[in-house]
Each structure stands twice: as structure tokens, then as C-alpha cells.
Image 1 (cartoon, rainbow, N blue to C red):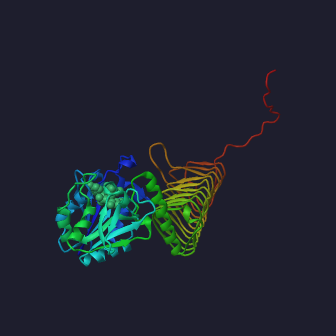
Image 2 (tube, protein in one colour; image 1 turned 120 degrees about the vertical axis):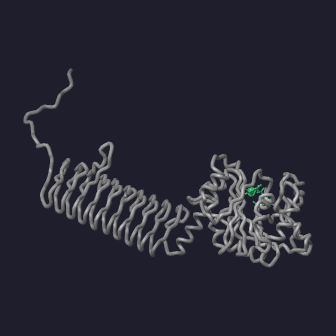
Image 3 (spheres, rainbow, N blue to C red; image 1 turned 90 degrees about the vertical axis):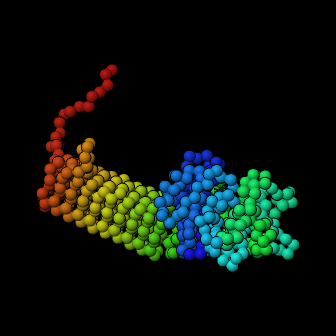
Length: 454
Ligand code: UD1
Ligand code: CA
């Protein structure tokens, strides 16, 4: 191990106006800091150090990874002071890479270039050319083209403020040198802070070369200070994910209307229409089609499944060749076998449905086991809740349930049974027979409708 990564995350994030620490605000459904940690972990064998301050306990609790070394910075006296909290824990010969908990889109490849520079006992500094550099530190050069320092906006002269190449804050250096420079920092500046950026000038004084690496993708160095910036980065992030999905062979009808808040594993020739929101772990087989406005969480879908528009599917396992929707709600614990049909305005919860079975219209199926080749008629309801406890309904193979049937659980309908439409089934229905409960129909001859009194 020869790399130590320091992630600065002690700042308050005042401009978010939130009770939640800034770095716990979600991007793509996961905390900002989770993205930064993901990127840091892609450096094999790097030691991970995170500096927290505001909301320290809450942040720590959100990341119970024993590999993270936590440091509390209290009070927050600047980025240099933050790094100083960690340096005593890092051996001199390590390369140190400084990252930021609120800059989530930085790429490993970009940071890798800084690491290489640090391993060469030079200082690697990530810079960016911005049309509007307001608020950022500016990079200062000598006449020979070498970097001589970085000056904060508040400390800059008017002339320096016109410089458009900015300091992104990402920096890598050898730990021993960094320790010397950080120990020598002072806070004699406009903000009264210990600036990490002042190490640049210290390095130059020590005759250490500072190499700038300029990123072409400005999004990767953008930080989150406001909810508006968070929304901007969310779109960048989603577009990145959309591009990756398309590279993997998924057709997205409109990559600008695709939201993946978790992870997607997709087979070939999957088509996802607009406004899909995919959360948690989603796996899609080959030739799966997802219609518009589908929300899905932690669900696994096999080959050749069609999800029609406006479905909500959570924690479900969907078998091959199945068709769901439009307007279906599939709730946790649902397992659909192969070639099942779940139609409009059907809700299914914690139930298994066998091969080839159909629940096509306006039904509630809860805590139920349904066999194969069953037809459940429109408006069928499993009455699984007695006001205190949940009970199971069991429906055998080849059963036909007439429309508008209530099945009062616990109840079993055996193989091949037929239930007459409009029945309320309170006792088990035997195999192969017609069972129905229905008030006899009568006609009252000569009956007159009431008329309004004059
Ligand atoms: C910093 C840089 C600036 C650069 C900009 C890029 C310094 C002095 N300035 O300015 O050159 O252009 O980033 O975004 O480094 N933090 C702590 N403890 C502290 C202070 C800050 O952990 O005591 C963390 C914050 O949580 C934040 C990061 O460091 O994640 C940057 O701090 P911030 O105060 O936002 O620095 P900037 O003024 O933006
Ligand atoms: Ca900032």
C-alpha cells in the first residue's frame, strides 16, 4: 500500500438550508459521499481517510465500512487544517491524494494522473478552465510556464481575478513533503483560514515541481453547495449512466428522461421508454421492454418480459415472457413464473403466480399462491386481512375464478375448480367442481319506479 486518500467533508453546507449534512444528500439515489468513496475504492489498496465535522456522527453512521479511517475536524479552520488532522496517520513515503465529499463526479482516471505525479515526488494539481471562474482559486504561472501558486478569489488582485484557469482543489503529493508544507501554513489571509492551496507556493520554494493537469470535462470538478447545483449534477450523473447503459446495448428512447438510482444489469436488446425511474438493484434479461413512466425498485426481470406504461414494481421476481400493465402495481414479495399476464389496475403483494396464469383486470391478490394456467376474473379480491392478522389464499392449477369474487382467507381453491362470478368464498372449494355463492335472482312483475310528488 503506498497511496493514502484524504476526503474532506467537514464543511457545513449552509447554503443547502438542510438538517441533513450536505454530503448525505442523494445523487442518483445515493449520498454524495458514497460516490466519492466508490471512486476512491477503485484505487486498489489505497488507505481511505475521511475528515468530518458538521453532522459527524450521522455521516459516520451512514458508512459503516471498517476500512474507512474517520477524523473529526472541530472547529473547521480551513482545508489545510482539515488535511492536517489526518497527516500524522500517514507514513512519509505514501502518495497522498486529496478529494472532496461534495465533488461527486470526479473520475478515477483523472485522479490517476495526479497519483503518478505524486509517486514521482512532484505535486500534481488538477485545474480547469472556466468561462466564469468566480469563487475559485486562480492558478498563477511564472514566465517560464511553471506553476508558482494558487490564489483565492478573496485574496486575488483584480488582474489575478481575470485568470480563467482555476484550482479544482484536487491535489496529490508525497506525504512527507506535504506534512512539512501543511505544518508551515498560516491563516494570514482574507478568510482567516489555513488554506491547503498555499502548499503550492511552499512546494515551489522547496524546488519541487508542481504539475497541472487540466480536466476537459468540467462537470467532474463541480461541487455541490446549493440544491440548484445538486440538481445540475444529478442530470450530469444521469446522462453519464444513460450513456453507459447505451454502450452496454440498452436502447433508451430518450437518455435525458432516464433515472437510475442504483445499479442496472441489463441483457441485450432491452428497450426502455421515457421517464423510467429505476431504484436499487435492477436486473433485466434479454429483450425486455419497459414502457413509459415505469417505477421499479430492487427487481429482477427475466427474458422477453414486457412492462406496459405506468407500472410500479418493487422487490419482485418476474419470470420470462410475462406481460405486466398498463397501470399495474407489483409489491414486495411477488414472484411471477413464466408467461404470466398481469393487467391493468391489478395489485399483487407477497404472492406467487404460476406459469401461464392471468390476472388481467382490477384485482387485489395478496398473500396468495396461484398455480399454473389459472384465470382470475376481473375484480377478484383476496380478502387477506381480518383486521388483525394476514391469512393466505391458495389457488391450485387450472382454476377458473369468475369475475367479482371475494376469497376470504384462509381459503383454498383446489386444482381445476371453477368459482362462479360474484361469489364470496369463505370455505375451501373442492377440485374440479363448480362452487358459487350467489343470492338467487328474482324478477318482481309489475313493479313501478317511485315518482316525484306534485
Ligand atoms: C477551495 C479551494 C479553492 C478551489 C475550490 C474548488 C482552498 C483554500 N480553496 O475553495 O482554491 O478553487 O475549493 O472548489 O482550499 N473543508 C473541510 N474543512 C474545512 C474547510 C473545508 O473539510 O475547514 C471541506 C469542505 O467540506 C469542502 C471542501 O473542503 O468539501 C472545500 O471547502 P470550501 O470551503 O468549499 O473551499 P472553497 O472556498 O470552495
Ligand atoms: Ca466550495
